[in-house]
Picture (cartoon, rainbow, N blue to C red):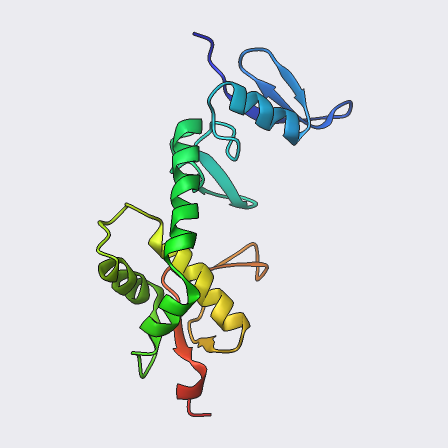
Length: 173
């Protein structure tokens, strides 16, 4: 069985190219993703199981759940799609209407998960709830009241571990 580990290769001839342990030289990201898919590797992390969030900061790949595998990537993508259909902005809006003060992402996600009677890990509830809370924030319905937990690369990239929001009409401004 041939081993496939795809890594970035910066060179003057190819520009942003990629190389694979099997000997393949891949010009461009699209060719690297195609080679990864053909060899049952995640097309986001190219089988490395890690993704680069910012220069010098890596974490387990969120697309394949840190496995590096294509099967896991597809299962996770299907789970994200199911979560998008099941967890709606109306549902999240209903949950946060029960809070008089600030609330954490994890609190809302737990209430949604419990309300749908989902076991932990069945669907990506936290990421879906986060996306909907950010949507409500952009619409001016809620305001983030958390400071970033970490500044990465100066102030260009910020990291929130369990951000806190508050409904805009309860801020008392």
